[in-house]
Length: 379
Image 1: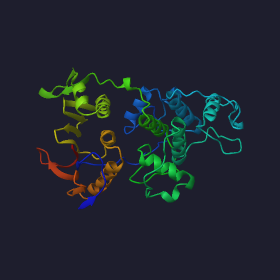
Image 2: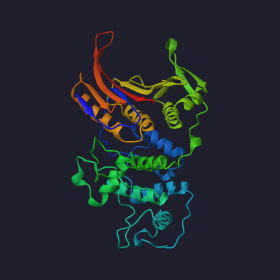
Image 3: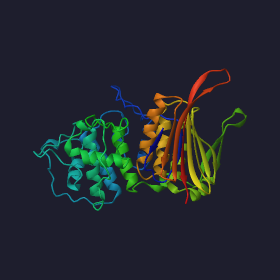
C-alpha cells in the first residue's frame, strides 16, 4: 500500500505503534501526572510555569480562574508590565481567592468575561475554550505573530466544535499545541484537566522560546551499562559533541528523556544516541554523512511513555505536522493487521515504512514487535 504525503526534513521506517488512548479523568484525582504527561509537566515546573496551587490533582478538571494562574505565569516570562486601569472588571470575583490575579489578567488582555460583568471563576473550562484562550494569550505575548492556518482539518467531531472556536482549534492543532484524544478527534466540549492545561501553556512557551535554557544542562549526561547483568551508571561529556553534530533541540530532548526514571540512555556517540524505555522499547537516533535516521521499536503498543517520547523527538526533527499525521495513520493500519507493511514515498527525498512482525522467544512464545524508522536525506 503506497500513500503520498508532504513531509519536511525526515524519512521514516515504522515498526511500532500506538496512539495515546483517550485520556480518562478518574473520580479520584492524583498528585502525580499521568505517564503521557509526566515529562512535559515536570519540565513546565522546572521552567516555573506552574503555580504551587496547581502542582497536585493533575487529572482534575481545571477551572477558569486556575487557567488564569497558568496564563499569568507565562506572561510573566515575557517581562511585560501590566498597568491596572480597571480594578473591578467582574462582579463575581469580589473576595475570590484569585481576585488579584484575575484583575491583573483582565488588564493584561488575556481573559474576558461573558459580556455582562460575569467571569464565573470556578466554572470548569472546555478544551475549545482553553484553545481559544491560549491563542489570545499568544497574541498578547507576540502581537506581530500571525495565527493564520495553512489548512482546515476534517476533525471527526467537527460538528461539536463551536463556530467561534474553530479557527483557534485549527491553529493549536496545526502547531502541536493542542492534540486530539485520537486521530483527528478533538473532544471540544470535553473539560480540560490541570495537566492538559499545563501542557498547552508549556508548548506555547516552547514555541515562543520562553523556556529557561539553563534548566536542561547539555554539558554532561549519564549513560547506563547493563553488561554482566548489572546496571552501571557513568557520566560523560560526549553530549556536547552530540549537540554539535545534531542540534540543540534534539539534544535537550534526549537529555530530558534520559532523566525519566523509566528511561535509560544506553549508548551515546557524537553521531548516535540510544534510549531504552523500561524493558519494552528502544529509540535509536543517528546521523551519517548523507542522512538523519530515527528508529523506534516496542513490544507493547499500550506504553504511553513510548509514544510521547517518540513524539517529542519527532517535534525536533520536523517543523510541520505531516510527520505525526503519518505516524498516527500508520498506527491505525498496524492495529488492524499485524503482518502489514506500510510504505509511503514523500517526493524523492523522503521515504517512510511502517510494519510489525511476530517474534518468538526462546520458549517459543509469540509476541508482536512494532518498529518505526525515519530518514531525512541530507543535501
